Length: 284
Image 1: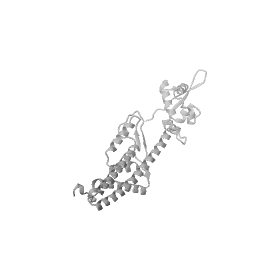
Image 2: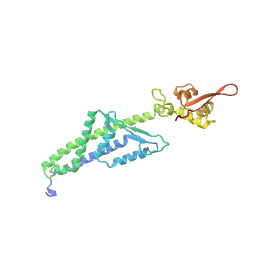
Image 3: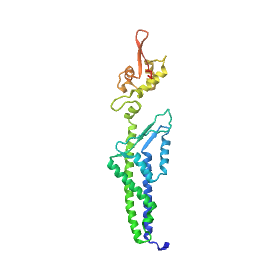
Image 4: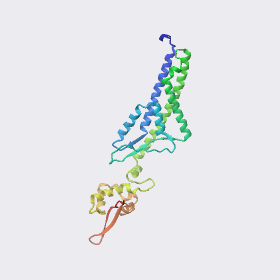
């Protein structure tokens, strides 16, 4: 059949097929954005590079491959856990952190979601590879059947598009909540000072123990540090670190309760005693 003899509806089929292809590409774009942004890992200096590398790994993946990654990392079973810190070499003098956002579902719901995404992938492959084999686009009846199929396909694509938008909205809301927590006093107390919301103190990593170690190294005399000198040193350099922040009345109480230091009292002129401290030796 010559070009001028093709059914007029064939152009409608071409437009409908193009609309489906564009919508599928939009879905792929949203899916790549979701997979690229759902976690951040690394150190302060490597965060941007880690994010760029993740985007590069996703850039050329097909919809089927993206769907596989989706159900391995973001849409997961309830109780899902995995190692998120980077496994490649990172700067030894910088702390590493990982933050990940996931959508966890019960087994039945997860199976339904997986089936829906697999249906989308199969539809995409059929439209790309087998569409003109399935429909006779040189007859009016064939074009009409193809148009109905494309309309149904586009409706399904839009349904998945809205699902992806909902997931990304949930991700954005979770990231906003996480950012608010990271900027809060509760996070500073936990991450910097080692004070949990329930009041428990992780003494070895607490802020006050860290600055006491600094003072001990700076003011040591034959391995011991005068507490009075350390107190003045800390007041000048770390005024925010006080015993009261940790629910203690005095520096000697901090030294005792932390169990990270030895504390002795040495006599001085006039008969009074002065407090000296040092880090406890590490036992092998």
